[in-house]
Image (cartoon, rainbow over all chains, first blue to last red):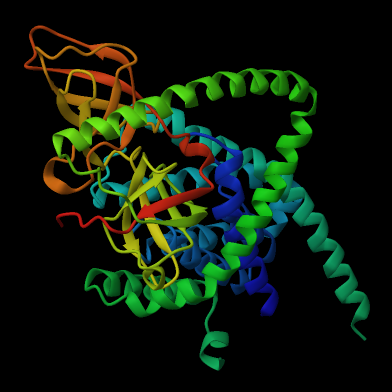
Length: 166
Length: 274
């Protein structure tokens, strides 16, 4: 499971140190969310759930959100993503992108709700249209790029694994 | 391990969700310090390395993107240096004159700040809250509510939470921060607050009869003793005056470029009223 920890720290570090300086005004991609969703759709197993939990825990340490909320949201999104059958995605990978848009939107709403409970009222039309919607669209666009790469990598690794079996 | 393997995907998700709820409960009863300190111990050294690497990557990208502009920028900078040298001489004169007048009036010199320099190692990962993480914490003498500045006097925000080797800084831009402020020219007091979309600051509760003009300087007033007086916040960009209202408001352009903060300083010898 060492690779899971490596991916967790790599993604969290990039999300915390690089992404905020590349994107401006809060409209930044959520690298961890996109990776967790793609990973959960492709791998199905518990690794996506662990990745979601661990990365959420690390990010939560550096967030103003109440401790525990971020891993919770990431785990919920990862579980929902595992519900989609891999055959459906294999036949039409655009479905994965549509699901990415929906799940990303759900995640943003959960974050907004938790900020609201924490006393930060961000439920304004301007905020929803200029920050949340832009962020969901950015996540979906990034998923368009990342998902095919991960899918190709996954099938390649599966084939090698099968070839190694007696 | 066999318990984990015996669970299906739904069971595993439920187990992790329950674990998260337990962490939320721990935070609610303020018993999450062990977890937070452990996370701080493990993740801060990694973030220190990756923030340097990220800065290098961003710097290289910026350099490559700006190669064409370098000669123009060089010419502009040379002109600015010449102007600043002239300004420096004038300021030195003012400084001496100020010192002489202070001596004559018996006034004490303004409090010298004790500053602790820290690097920004992370930003708020989700949402649009304006929070930064710096690589100095309790071990470096940082405490909650200490003011955070750049260039010895440009206000960035204040320390919100402290861990052993890192601290979380709430930026002035956040909507939850309300800072007692003063227009330097007219001495009118008001409250500076972040705008909802993180696109600047606004100053409210300025008395209707106060003279406020575009370009006026906004500084901390020191009222409430939460911040030292005289720290620069920004400049008035627009004034919204409605004669039907008791107070006027102003849009403020922050003096600090919050999007490009790499190094900040924490004022460690100011004791705010908690």
